[in-house]
Length: 507
Image (tube, rainbow, N blue to C red; front, top):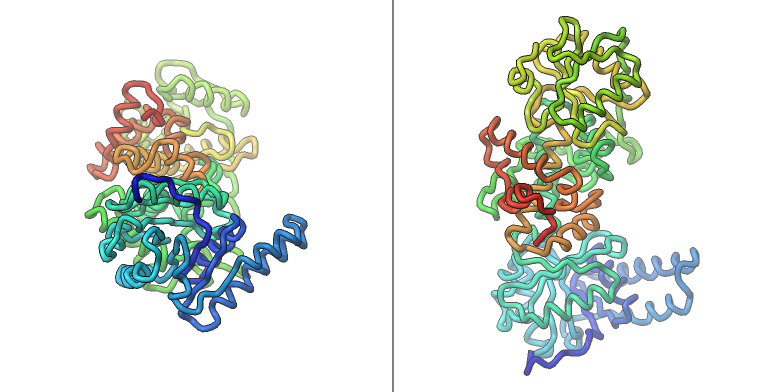
């Protein structure tokens, strides 16, 4: 921008494409005091979008969340741009059209010929390179990513993504605009998936990997991650909500854009279900079946009946040992304190990143009497148990009865390195650490953006600190050794900070 002179805030905003995203952006822009011009090639689309937005404001007045005077002022700020030329006076134009590179490039090259030299071209792309879109323009320095999330008025986050040639002042002005619209602005670099979609890769892909290994079923995975992990929704319920036609395409796109990075590897399970038309809620069936829009869920498995038997605890972590001891005492079962278990004892293990088989063999314990317990999140809301292939059925039933004695739900899964929660959380933390390592965004921005954009209970870096980064590192290292899959290699950001005892949020 000329002579480095600060430019005034944006006053007039144009929107090309008035679908769900375009109308959402229009609504919050008008509420921020801007004059908004709507343009769409489809006949009647602008009227439909305007009616929808005005209807939202009318409902706000009815519910006394908005004054009639404010609603009238907002309504007056919405105008139709019949042709692209009607956007010529806009300070900034945001495109929310089809997600195709050539279409966005063509639109921007046409717009820049009619807009003022200082006007900004912003793309709401969720997956395309901002730099690539800008490369077709005569002045790429005024092109920037301005990526909102649906529904725009409720999802209080927008990613601000400068391309490689974007003027820094353009980024500052657009960031200020996002804040004026009432959103948290997450400044991110122009990398595949930007920040939020990049950070969200581990949740679904690792859950699909667990399902593909027949560790347990999708219902149990969802229940464990909601109850133990505190996630708002399980990964399979989320895939059904988003729709596999959308989710699978994003998985493949980011995987290929990162040149087959193993951390982002998709699953053949979603490809098969996509071909079968099992898209999720929109098709009436996905991982769950839907009746009148509601998922049909099986009941929790009933607890088996089992007589109390001696319990021996082989947990190597002192805190885990104490929690397990307290549970055994509260259930009134006999607890052995000898160095080795008796011939009748139920042996409880608490591995990190190991399977029950490997842990039992390493400790020299009888695998047929061993049951592993996931202690990563404690024992409060759900207990996750894991058996070895040799664990006797009466031992499994005894452990299930013991851990469900107070009414807390219990999930029993097959042998797996790292349980369900450990694997998913460790992968989420690791991807977040790699985003920090690549300087895609600042640590605090990463965490806040993920909380707002994905609804996780904590951002990935704060999640790692919450569960103890040293434990997360141990889970990943053990998974890597057991599987040989580079998917589980620890980010240098994680390894260095865990080794030094520093928080993962430390820059």
